Image (cartoon, rainbow, N blue to C red; front, top):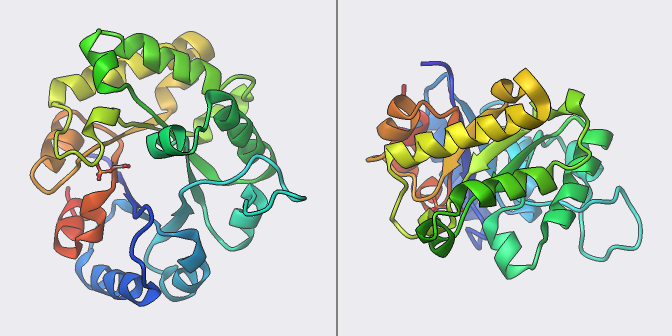
Length: 248
Ligand code: PGA
């Protein structure tokens, strides 16, 4: 099994920087792995964590804006993210799409800005809702998201993207996609990418997210052979997250 990407999405947790620091100290002691561990904490704590923990982990942000600088109160740009030493950015998470009304067009502009102005790796989240799955629309939803989110993205830059298949019904619910559902989604994503980009489509890394835990990690990384996982809730539990990160 090749080395995997283990991405921690802390979302808006924890409230205290000190608690995040304690969690990372614990993980430094317990994670011994060749997998690539990427921590995405709240942006406000990032510089501090980067100073202390960059020898041990890679870091990423959970969002950014589609402009490099200017009058955009409250936003941070991909260049700023790169400047502080972050190498990854999560884009188009379903919580951003649903709670903050992010559209595929917004996501597309962000991806283009990231890829054109920095060396940061975007982690693009896509996935269907419960209703869409029930109506057997998973393939068409994934296809529509990939097509619009990657519109006009330079073919030479496409390999730098990581795609996170995150079915919305599995996020934070404790209900996770089964092995066959994950394999089917992965095959659909590869087919859609190859239809657009040719063989390069096969080189794009695809990770799974949605209620990943210590019990299902083997089925996702080994049996479904995903390139990695995007972990929300379980990434805040030190014992569980080290088990996931150490998986081989
Ligand atoms: P979860 O979140 O692991 O808590 O389901 C995953 C995500 O939102 O990326």
